[in-house]
Length: 186
Image (cartoon, rainbow, N blue to C red; front, side, top):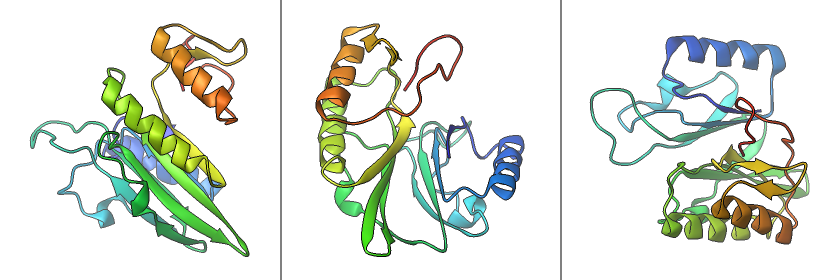
């Protein structure tokens, strides 16, 4: 399960997440725009039966709502360890873990790319995705590109660069319909 929640600290959104998790019991949950802050304890974000991995946005204002941030929940019954080697200083909003399943393993990541990302940040993101693509991986997130996946088209140059990257890397997009309004966001 993946969701861009725009504040998991909201009581209503937290309740919606808990209800969904209780009814559907997904194995893996990826959250972007958590709006969590470093001073929040993991226990405030915990879900029963899940291990939490998180990355809060750096340099947030102490007052007001947060911004950015990613969370990754993995069922406690899975052997999951954080992959610190997947940290990237130019693309900071991602969290990764490796899940061991019998004799195989899978890399799982959650990424958030801000809409006005710099070229340097995008370069860091591509490096990170290239590394992840060398393993069996599941990558979730909000990359804030405008891509029409059905027609393999992007609105702007950076959208087309992303689309080309996905195609030449033999990655597969699983969300094939608009996720916000009539536009295609990935």
